[in-house]
Length: 266
Image (cartoon, rainbow, N blue to C red; front, side):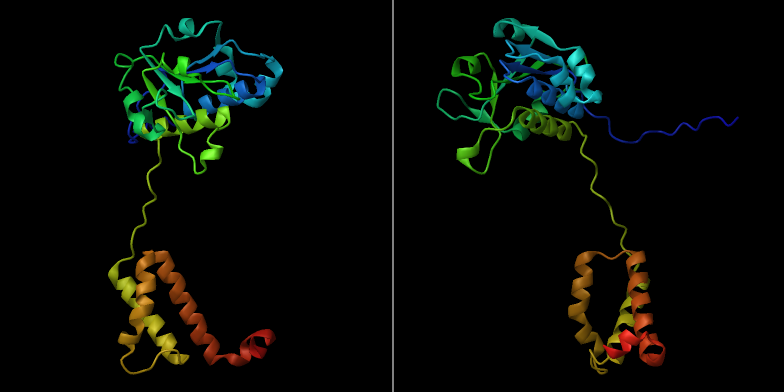
């Protein structure tokens, strides 16, 4: 039996988000609770806490949470009073769609995300993300129990209110990006210069042969075409593709009688 190969994981370690819980104040629909649980599981957040939920229909919650978020529902806590629910937390972040001089100052999720993360369990400050009821959101008196307030910017001020699960997901996404969870930008290995030059030679020869470029001073006229390719950052495979196109064009010019009938008509 072969011994398993231990491969070193060189990806940067993501900062913890498990100390960040989601507190839903008077959620009105069981489906929204389940959808919020699903968003939490997607983004690796901590525990779900409910304060005076209007409905706790287990089947509806599980249906929208889906199987991978059932663990969030199983560990869910329910309270009747907001101060009691917020008592374990060292930091409470309120969320709101409404503006007002008594409700801010407002952070965007991106501005605040890095401040909420922790390198390890010993450094983690228990944090609550507090969301209000679906119809009205948090009251100003609720926001006064928060140390910071997040407002998700929207394009239309008249449509600033988001679905509860959408808001949880957006803030969770900014947290996962700030924690180092965003995938690296795909890297493209540029083609070596000799291969690029060979492709341009092929292209110039072909374009001259079909009469697109003049035979004299071809390099000058080819410059505008080179600019197009240079912007795209060609790879070796793409260069080989274009050289293949050029070869096929030259073959077609020399073997017109062998082309399919439709191609000869055109």
